[in-house]
Structures are given as structure tokens and as C-alpha cells.
Image (cartoon, rainbow, N blue to C red; front, side, top):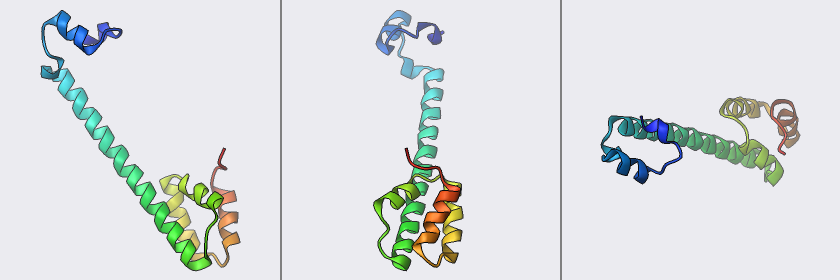
Length: 110
């Protein structure tokens, strides 16, 4: 029933219905779904940041400083691309190998 009042604030709906939405099952379920979704997004974001940071450290240790444009491109990769890059960098002999890999397997930054 609450879905019929899409233009009303929570306080207005509560006043009309004479109940606290926080006490309803639909509210608790929606809140739990949001919490779980937030946890999943947070885990993925943390994993992306961790993998890209590790790759950048490995590249820096092997080839020296990685310029900001390349670092930004690495940080924009999806998790599958980061995993592929992590394996590929074991075979890199020069920083140009990274450039070639990024040109082949990643989307350019806008």
C-alpha cells in the first residue's frame, strides 16, 4: 500500500496511516536488503582497491615509478581485468609491456 504514496514523505505516510513505517515488515525487509547490498558493494570496492594497489606496488618495484595516467587506467579496471593483469605482469620485461596490455585489454579513460 505504501507504494501508492510515492510523492509523499515518510512522515506524511506515517501520519496518514497512523503507524510507524519502521515497525512494518516491508520496511525491515527493505532495510535489510539495502544493508546487504551495501555490504556487497563495499566488499567489491575494497577488493578492487586492494588488487589495484598491489599491482601498482609490484609494477613500481619491478620497473620504477608508474606515471599517473597508467595508474589511473589500472585503477579503473574491473576485477576480472585486474586478475588478468596480475598474471600477465609476471611476464612483463619492460613498462611498455604494461602499456601494450592496457591498450589491448582495457577501455581507455574518458
